Length: 119
Image (cartoon, rainbow, N blue to C red; front, side, top):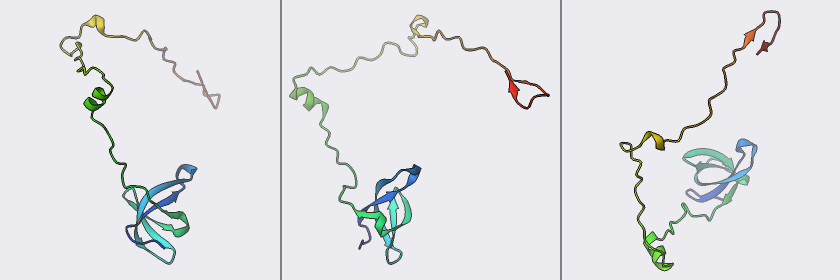
């Protein structure tokens, strides 16, 4: 039914949720059992948990360089301005500080006569 190096989708039951994950057949281990490599981990799956896959190995990169997009839509090509707050030039007044002062610490008190903790 399946051959070695054939791409397949395998049913997974991880996290109590059914999902299909792409992998490929490594070897046939029985009449209806196959070794399947999924994310560099080989596991044995029954043939009724496998489906042929026609998905590509990886998603092709169809990116377009930024300068072509900017020229196409007649947008100005601006270079990003370097931040003026470099480590050496940061002034104390420019640093944002939190106004939150925190909560007071509460320690647990153990009462030897009770079987629970009290605050």
